[in-house]
Length: 95
Image: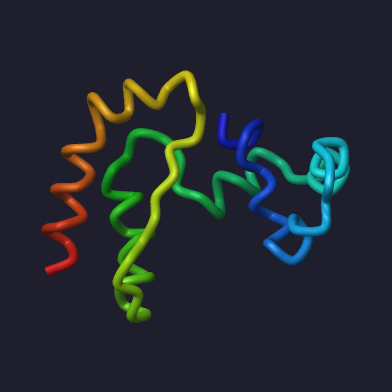
């Protein structure tokens, strides 16, 4: 799902801001592999992997961090099952 719906991350904002259509995004990301996404973005149910990835930003001095749940069809399940445990782990790790 992350590869299908979030592979645009690989181009960065300087590329994405100049792509006016979905066809442009498809062309710019046609060579992004599932492995590229998995190596760059924490994907899946492992909350510790997400907390570890966020920790790098705390260490760099960021105080506000936005997380994105990829996939409209799984948003409700994420909020129901994972959001509370993830937020608790993030709060504990940030102290």
